[in-house]
Length: 220
Image 1: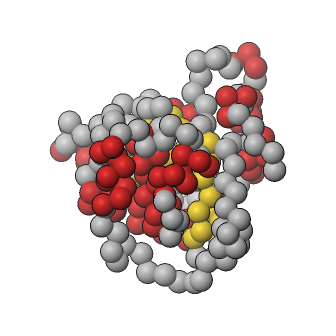
Image 2 (image 1 turned 30 degrees about the vertical axis):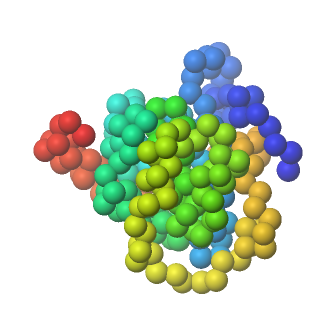
């Protein structure tokens, strides 16, 4: 599949009319494919304000206009890193969701979809056994991903021991050594529209933890 510049894609790919689209509207930066229990699962990434409504999502920008719709809200300062334990919890939750429904739409985003988004994607790639996860994310998702040395160190040093229990031997294109996670393409945008909604996305059970966090931790 030929790679295309993500900048070429517009809101029209998600069903919006050209009249409603402006050049300032956030767009998806790219996507990443990782092996999860024998399935090649695609995770999209970019500004969280560009998150598709149907996505099972991880938001690392609490000030995003769409933060309240996130399945998982993980606080991380711009150019910084999130809390280690909260990060492990978010990774575990996303991994279990991908195990349950590998063909659903998954999305990770922050303000611009570069530093913090790249950090989380690199951690998921590391959890999946991808060698050089930061390099992989920069090559296949977005070249400016994982912006700071502190973020790189966080990806390298976060303790992932016992985070998941393996179920099956990895199979598919990635296990065969053909890692081909293209940036966002027209086909991938169509796949977002066609993919089923994950049963855990935007449920009442994902709302209440965010409500109580907002209530008792107003600064996070």
